Image 1: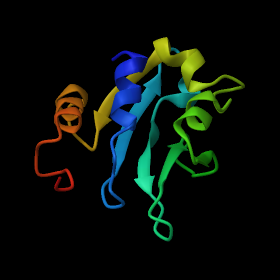
Image 2: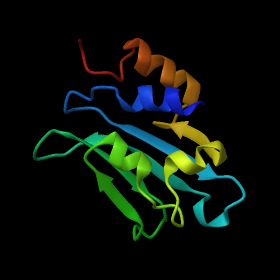
Image 3: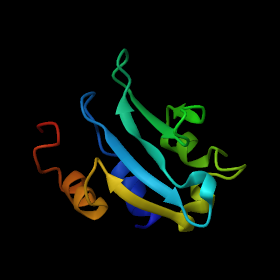
Amino acid sequence: MTFELFQKLMSFDTKGRSCIEILFLVKENDKFNFCWMGKMPDRKTKKDVFWYGLTPDGKNAYDYLTFEEFSSANVFDGKSLLEIWDNIVIEEINGCDPMEMVDIYLSRKGCLLAPQ
C-alpha cells in the first residue's frame, strides 16, 4: 500500500461512530512486530483521534489530533511513520484483508460504515 493510499484511508470521516484499527509490523525490527495504529472518535468530543499502540504492555501508546502530527511523530526509535513507511507491513484492517477494507472505506459502501 502506498503512503498516499494510506493517507486517503485515514481521511475517512468516522462520523463520531466508527473506527479504523490496523495491525502492522515494521520489517526487520523485532521491537515493532505486533503493533496497532488507527483512527477513532474521542468518546467525549466525538472528534477523531489518530493513535498508536506499539507494545503489548500498553506503555507505548500515543494519541494525536491530526494526521500530520500522527504521521510525523518520532515514535519508531526516533523515526516517524512517514520515514519508515517502506518497511511497514499492514497485516489487517479491522480484522480483515487490508486491501478489501481500503476498497470498502474508500468506496463508502458496506455494513461497517456509517450511513451517508
